[in-house]
Each structure stands twice: as C-alpha cells, then as structure tokens.
Image (tube, rainbow, N blue to C red; front, side, top):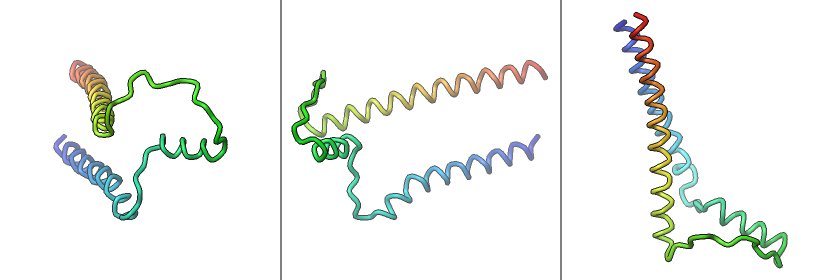
Amino acid sequence: MQNSSKSMTGLNWLLLAGVVGLAVLPLVITRNGAFEGADGAATEAIEAMRPDYQPWVNPVLEPASGELESLLFAVQAGLGAGVIGYVLGRYQGRSASARDEQH
C-alpha cells in the first residue's frame, strides 16, 4: 500500500512537471512571437478573403477597454476551471467512497 502511494506521488510530480513544461516551452521556443487570439486571426482571414463582408450578428456586450475584455475572459476561464475541478473532485470522491465501502 505504501509503495503504491509513493509511485502515485512520483507520477503526480511527473505530470505536474509535464504541465509546467507544456506551458513554458512555447514561451521559450517563440521568444519574440506574437501571441494573438484566434478571433484576430479569423478576422484577418475573413477580411483577406472577402473585404466587403458584413457580420450578421453583433456582440451583446462589448467591453469598454481591452483590459476589461481580458479581465472578463480571465474570470470566465477561472469559473470554467472551477466548475471542471469541482465536478472531477466530486466524481473522484464518489469513487473513493465506493472503494472504501467495498473494503
């Protein structure tokens, strides 16, 4: 039982190192790269293909500044990550509880 716990801890550290590597590696490889969103790239592609294109839907809420837009995006991402973490933790707790009841 203790060896299993040690191997799980090692695996968790390995996974954490992999996640950090995936987050840092693109920043190191493309030091002077422009990190733009997909929305901007899509707008440029559409304007290049069809300069007379008119959008058929307007945004419901348009933030007053780019900083506010970034803040709303970060809040949305944080809430989404919180919901996903809660659901995964809940399922993990249920399966651990079921395992404990069997033994």
